[in-house]
View 1: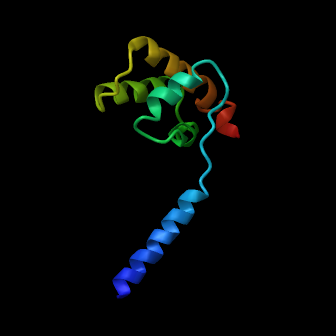
View 2: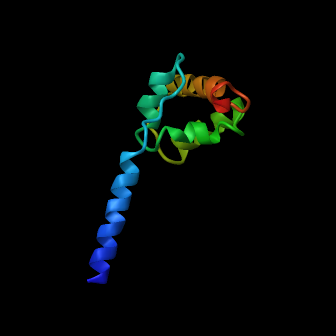
Amino acid sequence: MRRIFSGALLLCFLVGAQAQEKPVQLAEGAGRETVETFCSVCHSLDYMQINAWFLDHQGWQNEVTKMIKVFGAPISADDARVIVDYLAQHYGSGGRASQE
């Protein structure tokens, strides 16, 4: 009985916590739709904001390359350039969005 109660309590907590989450809004700019389309397939878009503090252009290039080569993200070279440029401009270390 205690397990059922504990499980139900945990479920209520998780549902309540999830209901309070706000959707991540990326910064306006060229490439945002491409980032939303490809990146959100595998992970939350808050990944960009979390990593914005320390990734510069080369760092974002390395991350996108890793997503393609290691995790198999189906991103073309052209789309990868758009994604990296967007992330470096808006979420690169010291960028505007990283300070919000």
